[in-house]
Length: 445
Image 1 (cartoon, one colour):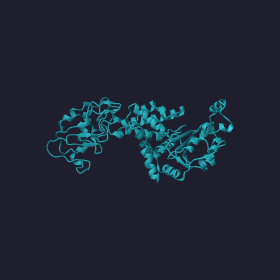
Image 2 (cartoon, one colour; image 1 turned 90 degrees about the vertical axis):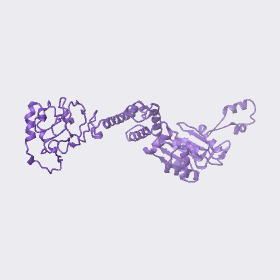
Image 3 (cartoon, one colour; image 1 turned 120 degrees about the vertical axis):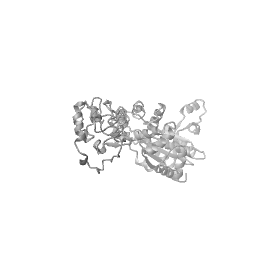
Image 4 (cartoon, helix red, strand yellow; image 1 turned 30 degrees about the horizontal axis):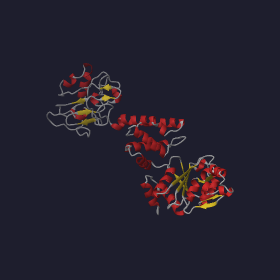
């Protein structure tokens, strides 16, 4: 790998997406022959980076998993005591020196990496070094600084081709300065949602794109919560795999609760993620049923914002409206402007109808019993707003005679007549911007 860009390409070929910072750190570690210390939150891809590097270099991968109480006999080398004892009982040991040879030496991960004689140096991963004891770090100083291991009985073994050494740490404790000084260092951040989505897409090819996008966005928001363990990329991959196994094609709040064990690993985190899922569910319900967002009165085809009352509009929580506030005018007096029937802000004029907007508004429909009140729409109809009133419906021939008045109950007939005749034709402004001039002769407006 001659350039950082080549590092990115080679790692990409083995399905590991590395950013520029990590690619530069790996390039310098290879070029300078120094160990690379990777730190970051659990699940960000530190161990996967070492594995991908071994695949990209087409070289053996050797792993040393650290834990509390790890000793040199488990990390560096160990003598085969059973075989030595058998050798003594058979009388094959002439002296003690014959018992401490390569025949009785058991190579552990570090010594195996040092003595590897293949064409390319192996990749040695010392995983989670922060879990080991402080004393174990001192055992690594010689190896990290000189790529050598000293065995008192046999001497020092130095690597002919220094292995590619990658150490990882979750920062559960501070590492010694002497160890850090011998290594190059890089901190791996949580990937951005777009990069995380690309990584998950490669890891779970069967998942849909909307599901991957929503899941990575949700994980990004969950990391901002006060969690005991923020979900990493590994948890994201497991979660999307679980959702895909359930047949989900997009993220739903119920699916989050069913698979919460893949991303929340403590009781407190489970509560926090559950609350976050409840917010997602509420948001999805609001988005699906919001009049402001959709422009539709719930459950009907009535457009609330456009001023068109289509069909028998069903107002949320009020039931279906029995009549429609649409006045179909076959012929009307020439001196009655249309703006006197419906206010300019709420009337929508079409070739066939004059649709009065707001006549079945949610506020009025809540108090109406099977009706659509005409209150608040036309200045001439403001008097007709009682809850028991049924608005004028489909007057086929609206003239100065009785048809429109006859369609109104007697108790309101006087107010309708008064509203229709309270102004003379001369008092109405024919040039009002909100009025549409009428054509002569019968027609539908």
